[in-house]
Image 1: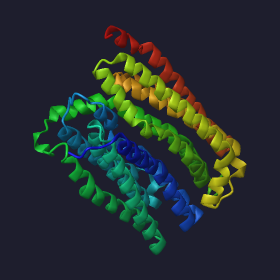
Image 2: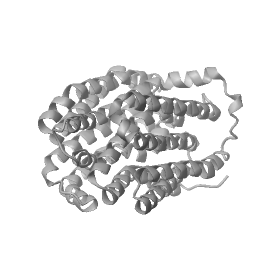
Image 3: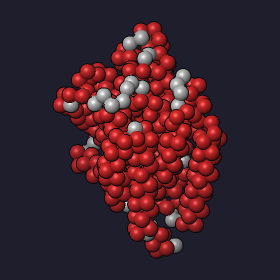
Image 4: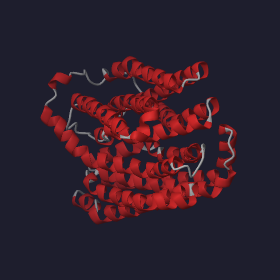
Length: 417
């Protein structure tokens, strides 16, 4: 097998992570520049729905798979589980589109934007294998090359055809073709796929182990989307005009990218699992402390950069005037920081296999979002949406910290010193 240097792993992991953080920003930019504000609103809302349904497709197995150092389950089991969850997502999506009248006018766009995310979920199971084998360079290559290819196909099709539906379809096809030509061949370096050897009981066990992670992620994306749903409701009531959904999505893209910072830290999460498995407790604690120091420094830098540069840059990139939303953006930044710290806390608890307790913190955040989104958005529009997001993220962080210290994973550490 090819020798790989830490520098190469770092380079491709960072490049792949950056492409993941940038792809939603770039896609919205392309639609905003190529089409009118109404089309941008439709695409923004479709992407918000897709963000929710892709959680069903992935079932949040990746974090569990990547830290499965002892290989409790084979890659065949993870792969078949992912196929089943992808099929379940498509079925649920079709039911949602049929029984939700608000989607009927844009059913094609919503379906294909969501189906594109199925390809992401399928690729993700291969990336989980690469990460488990400590080859994040291959996972990073997969992310970067697939994101680049599908985005180029989307952009070219949109510029040539001016048809959003055909562009999303072309993007989806190119993404699945990439998986067949890159992800699957590279997986053979570590495992010869043989799905017929998978036991149904193992699939059920994987789903059971990851169910708390799935519920958490589903609730989290629901929290993220509540302000967008509230904005869409008041738009349908004629209380706001075209472009507001687009403006909020533009303001939110750096926040979503900030939360994807966890992708940069994935090697550290896997390494924590290795230290725990090898009972190198002092290494574990030092590494964990360094992770939080890096996170604090990076979040502080992004916050300061965002205050002074984000709005002017977004105005130039998207050709909009977002100056009136500067306060809203700062509120969103604070919410993004709280979200990032919560995510890292949750990942560490997952390493300790205490993820079942995290459902509590996500339920707390979800309840706060339900209670605050509609009233705040109805009264303050985008500023209200930002306040609702911040309240939900702070509630999630506080609840996560309480769970972290109540479950006290360091009791386990002291017993194994």
